[in-house]
Image (cartoon, rainbow, N blue to C red; front, side, top):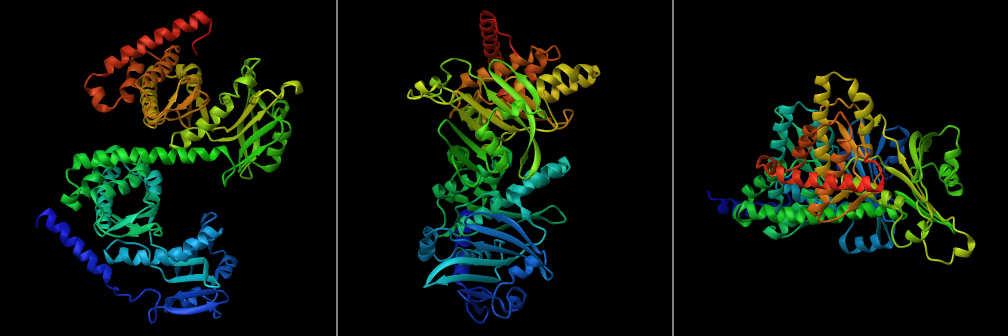
Length: 602
């Protein structure tokens, strides 16, 4: 059978299955479902589950389960609560869809409840052979025909975990050869499953690895199931354009979890199933990659913007002569003390002074974060110029630039310790308050990464004590890790013009096969999309110039760093030589400028 015939046949079979009611009969209708009613809440429930889930009066046994300690909250937000209940007969998931505003009430008036929609989509997926949840009860609260909170209950899918958790936590801990085989099979299985959905006209508008469950059988063959189905839409088989747009959502979510090779293997498997509908693999891949980049930039920027105002994660407070934006994880009493007296930690007898210079003062102390004692770094950006407040009226302050850069990095999955608080204070005399300006002093609080050491301190104090062979091996590992870190930074449209050894942390064990590096002191970080080559060269030159100031670092190590930074095809083709010459010219200019200004090259 040709590819076109196979695609046409699969569409016809899928359409026939969707028209049929299936082996379980009609959804939420007798005799397969029973009706129960308690107050304003009505329940459709499977007969064999009624006594397990509902009381004789028809109410959900949720309070009883909580009293027995069987309820574990998995997700909690303003729009839904997802709980896992460890019943003696087997675990079930209780998904409660909340209605915090009238917007949700009106949405459900036109589109039915989210619980009912999700159950219907689950039946349609099962009809085309895609594993998914199996609802056993639906509860809806109605007041004067308006639908409010509704609840969907389904048994747990045994031995399955979310795909994003598997890629982040389980796969890296596997033996290398086994991990490679699992990655290959997983990419192909996911491509085939997605193609089957699109061929049946199903499009998931919230398509990401967190909405897929994975289970490996004894031979490491992947089994995938789709969950969180309220965002599923059903229509005609997806065209090449619509398929590329939907795949861009999954591809974007996998940017931080899967390699480029795995994503290409997924697309190849997808195109093989759908055949002539999509055309050639090359042009289709290029289309998906372009859409993925635009979608990723949009979501990364949206997540990073959360740090500028009040929401579920942050609180913004503005007063007459100061303002503060803080994470909600900070203890409220500690936050109030800092608002009243931002300089208090510098006189705290338990604080450890880390740095005191003309530009910054830094201490380390312990505060309560999420009700647990946490070591933090607190920094005051001192006034560098008399007109500091006037300058910050037309440009962001140093603390604010570092605060936003921290969240840009974290939204893009780049390693950096999380910032907890940014605070600005105006110290101008009363007669100058009429002049437009920003804060004259700013403060920034960051979680201290433990255990950790700066790359500069490691090269100065620890590496020289090692045997020669160990020093060479350590420098090779660090060069590779630095090149990969800088490449990821640039690939995600970020530049750091002050990238130096003292602004890079080695977290955990410095002798690990792949050292964990993270960035600190982010005042020089900028978001530029697309990032020009000149910026890339400047970042490379600044880092290599800083490293070569250490006797332990040599020219060969810098070349290894550059080879790890460049794409493999450019490095293999010898193009690294042109880049190296540009870096050397930039380093000579940097050294000459610092020499004229009498400033050391740190």
